[in-house]
Length: 354
Image (cartoon, rainbow, N blue to C red; front, side, top):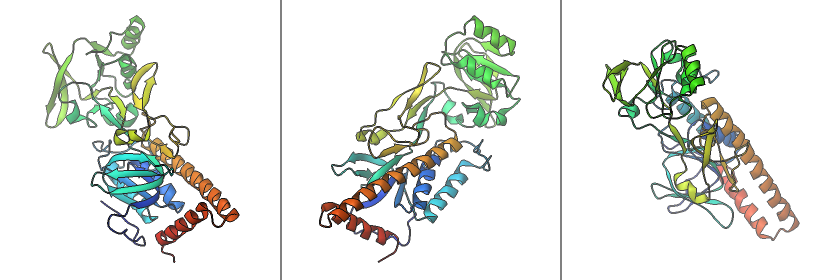
């Protein structure tokens, strides 16, 4: 899907299209950042692969005013809003990225086209790497879950299983006990709880089952039980797993971004791109927002992170525009003046002026 501002002329064949900002990723963070920038009258291009992480979920939760909205509907509304302010959206992936000597960026898309930008906003999210149990990926986001605040209400009072794969499994079981009084911790490949954890689990009536899990039992497209390697089946209507959350960097790593380990309670749960409170990364001119920087953000948090990053990028561009204008005023024959004139002409073209 491509949305274009009808006032923006198509470039000549083979000409690299230039934007103030290219946003890579069209989820809540990317679209929110693009909306903020488009409303600031910046030329914005959103490049999105069209495979949102939360697509299997039935609804977005804990998003005030949007509670229960299907994820696809929320994104469709966001895309329309960005396009309504002159932002452009294109379906595709970035296969190469570089920072040029002039300080801007060049991106090559999967179809071979190239675009350039003065600034980048990365909102590519993360990849959920699931434990190696047959059937998990097919049920992911439906009755194989990980976040109680995303899905706890929807499976309340059901038989909930916790798949133990790490030292936080007992904590997960105690947390999910808030939504159901039928919670079972399957130790699987995780460590055995210590005496204190066993006492806590017993006090909250959480069952503990030893042995590895071999697969899921599904009937009429619903999870009904889990099957242990030793043979018996245990009733289970929702299974909680702990994926490894890996920041989706891909070809953008060529910009010099190095993901770092994300820890919770001293335990590594995945990787993320480091960014400050407004999304600025260690690479000048590159911002990041959403789950690529914060693995635990829900949709509302990701959207707000995109908004903050968009505002910070606009402020940075404004400062650069001002420096160039001052330099041009001091020396009307300087390269800065020539650049300012060229960008003014391009800007007038984008907004239908002459």
